[in-house]
Length: 620
Image (tube, rainbow, N blue to C red; front, side):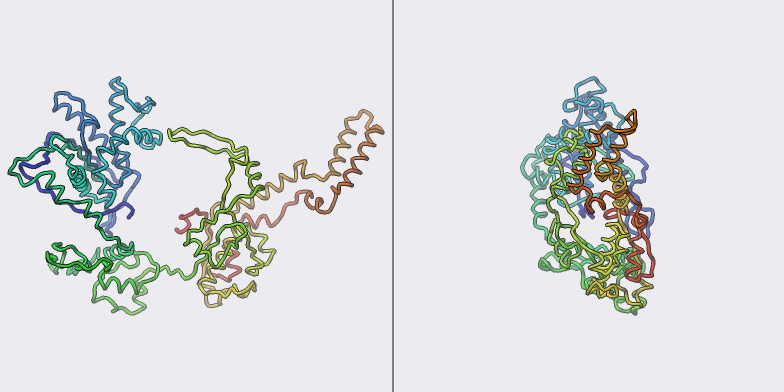
């Protein structure tokens, strides 16, 4: 969906044309690769290996370009042909960034040929990259930056006009290069710059894979010819037509694709649900129906017909009615049944429920960061929708703590190089962060304090989120911190399960316990009196007579007195400096029991599981 467009181009081929093609000036590449194919014809969508598909595009381009240049040289007395030999380019355009990067690789291929011949290759200071195996260059980010720099001006002059329509429409697949030609004629021809003698290099590509590169030449047709670049540009008015498009709701695409999926296996006879004829341009042909013998009939919108005004739904009434009935969240695969007017409303509720695979969302909860803010506030979803960043300044103590960690940053530069930089002062540490506010399981949800202490912070937040979601769904009252108000009604308990997903679960608990142990072993953690005693024992062992002088004893007496005066043996320090003792609750914190604890608190007796997941992966 992010790159796909829709388009069709009609091309008239004949004599005395303003743009001509020489069959001798072309080269073709073919390879058997499984990057984009349709093994299952029961569904309309292909199987795609995106990463492989991009490499196949590069390989096809480089192979066909090298042989194309050699053929042009052979046909033109050995003249050298490269990316600068053509006035304009038209590329098959899956998406604009791939076209830009691929165009840069033409200059890379030219540079490699120059290096092989012992000639200079301007713009390529790193000569080693010109001799690397070509497969190793496809993921070279430094080279990618170099190619973008080397080809930027040429791309703007030679290819950007042809690629403009694709940027505005999206990938039209088989129509792609022809849409690019139309864009070039409309823009460059419209400016009067596509004059006789100009050459156009075309790269046509299809997954699987086939590719052809050929050259088109602009010529002046005879005076009697009804065709010229100027007339073509005036007839196309492509940019003007694209600017006049109507912006519609994304939901229109959802409705159309869901209907298309339903109808994929409709069979015959068949009566299309789409289009809503009033939204088609005058003169448009459309499928009227397919009879039981698979014979198709078409209709045409009258040339003098008036289109429905902007804002009129594109979806036909039957689609809108069913959409309104199905206003629940469910996968498209749950609605793959043929859609006809006769079928609408004829099924009973039980049959209709079995036809659909439904995932119904009845409650949500969102805990948000923000110093001093309530983590689970009633207005959290509104804050998200309003674009609240939830970022607050980092405190001085937090900055000091970050400095203590001796963080080393990896800084990357535009030329592709990088450098390790140590963060050793407050000016270089993070200034803003999303920091968790305050919440308490016991005071908010009636969780026993002892049970709350067995959870690490991530588990506590998860349990609170689960409780709030149950409240949002109306399954629990949750009006106070009475535990009974957070329990599910008995009739829902056996059918309610818990899926708990977190990233690096129990990591905080493990690190915290290790740090507590290590801190107990440092000098700074020991009581002052114990340090004085240890120092006296060491001096005794070092003394030949195993006794201290009167002066040393007097010095130690003064140290003890000074320590007592400073209050170094008060109760607070005694508690802080006590020796490390293993906390048995640590085991509960690292066992990742958030799912079980939520189930225990809410009374969920259904399926229960935990998974380690990050970000969007959690939804799977």
